[in-house]
Structure formats: C-alpha cells, structure tokens
Amino acid sequence: MKKRTIQKLAALPLIAVLLTSSLTACQAKASDNTLTPVTLNEVAHSIFYAPQYAAIELGYFEEEGIDLTLVNGAGADKVMTALVSGDADIGFMGSEASIYTYAGGAEDYAVNFAQLTQRAGNFLVGREPDSNFNWDKLKGTKVLGGRAGGMPQMVFEYILKKNGIDPKLDLTIDQSISFGLTAAAFTSDDSNYTVEFEPFATGLELEGSGYVVASLGTDSGYVPYTAYSAKKSYLSAHPEVIQKFTNAIQKGLDYVNSHSAEEIAKVIQPQFKETPLENITAIVERYKSQDTWKEDTIFEEQSFELLQNILEEAGELPKRVPYKDLVTTEFAEKAKK
Image (cartoon, rainbow, N blue to C red):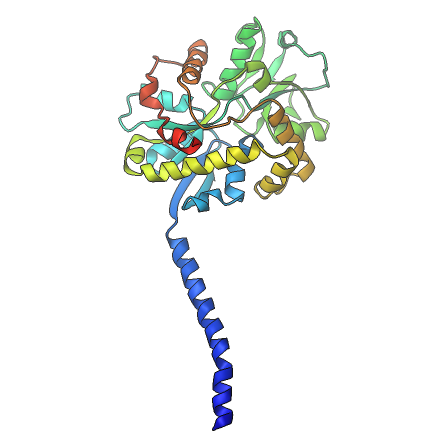
C-alpha cells in the first residue's frame, strides 16, 4: 500500500508538467486566434522594400496582433484591382494608382496612409560598364521601359526631361514587355539599355549581360515612390488594424535605418531564398547609400504635389486631385511617436 502511494506521488510532477504543457499549448493557440488576418497585396517582391520584409521576419506584425498574408500583385494596376475588388485589405504600390481611381469617379476610392520609399528603386542597365555615363548618351538608342502611366516609366521620363531629352523624339522606349520580364528580354534583344529593379539589375551584372550605369533614385531626387493604401470604407471600419499595420511598418523602417546592410540582409534573406546573401547585402547597401527609405511613414503634401507634377508632365493626370481626400497622416503620425 505504501509502495503504491509513493508511486502515485512520484507521478504527480509528471502530470503537472503535462497539464502545464497542455495549458501552454492551449493558451498559444488562443493567442494565435486573436491575431487579425490582413491580406497585403504588393506591387512587386523586391529588396527595394526591405523595411517591409524586416517587419515580417522580425515578427513586428505579430507583435501588433496581425496575421499577415503577403501576395505579389506584379504591377500597381493589378494591386489596385485586388484592393477595389476586396481580394486585398491593403495595397502597396505607387500612389499614382490611387489618383487614377479617384479621378475615375470611384466612390469607395483608395486612401494612402503610409509612405515607405522616397526615391525610385530602379536602375539603368547598359550593355557595357560606363563610369562616365551621362543621360545624353540615351539619344538615338533603344531602351526597355515600363508600363505607360506606371511610376517606373514616369520617373524615367521625368529624368529624361530634366536632362533636356524628349522621351518621344530623342530615343525609342519599348513598353511592350510585361513587368518583371524585361531583364530576361534584355539578354536576347537588340535594345541598348533597360530599366530594372533589384535583384534583376544585379542579376544581369553577375551573368555579364548588363551593367548598372545610373540610379534613377539618385537622378530623380526625392519622390513618393511607393505607399500603402486601403479603401475609404476599410479605413473607416478598421482604424485599429490600419494603426497596428502602420506601427509594424514603422518598426521595420526603424530597423533598416539603424542597422548595417549585412544585418538587414541576414534578416530578410528568407524572403529571397534564391538570391545569395552577399548579393542581398550588396543590393541593400546600394539602396541605403541613396537614402531610399524614409525615417517615418508620413506622406507629406509637398511629396503628393510633386507626384502630381510628374503625372502631369507625363500626360497621365486627367485633373489634379485634393491631397486631403487621398492621403491621411493620422496613423503615420501616431506610429512615429
């Protein structure tokens, strides 16, 4: 009898451990269930957006109570379509798409609530290295460009005009190739230059098919290149979700602005498994050196008006639209504190 009692007592710690483990698992599951699902549709999956991926990999969205699903929309027009249709809660793209939607008369239009990048993220790639490149060298050449009305193409044309080059008369810009496929096309066609995001620009260099000769981000100056937006109805119905999302992005910005390219590359590497770590590091350093990422997510009115100027010069702006309708800084200002 005494032996059985001892055996029962000896089993009590094990039972306690099992109960504790079960309770912990249940609590973790309950905690997971409190996360709010949010679908984010991004314009492209590029190292250009490192702060966003740092926020994902460092768990900042989970810290804010968000279960994030990331979808690559492959183009601002497609991202806006997903946002308007309700397939995405938040869109990440050039803010020109929100201007087009608003100007088109949409009632439940997209409102920009956080800006991420403040410079263009693409590069001009030529056939040969050119340490003495100047934009006049594009006269009489053929360039693989972007979609008409998209930020990459409009910023490219903006730079050309700043340098006294007429995009329609002084060179040939091929806009027939889909977004993300221009690098592959450049290896087999007769164009002299191509405009590429990373990692495609570095990829062309590594295979000896092209060489970066200019940074559009450096030569364009500060422009509001990409921002986060949500439909007016979503902002009204879920302000707490938008605030938590903006908080996570701000944390991502804080991280990339306070860490080295090597540290950032290691953090975001899971997002770019097919790209060697040393390449990611080089690309991050390239973006850091040109002051690509903002210190905060506030979309200033001055930046918005510059964007409209670029659209106007490109002949893509039906009419100027009010900043107060298409931008809110409420969430970005709170996230900054």
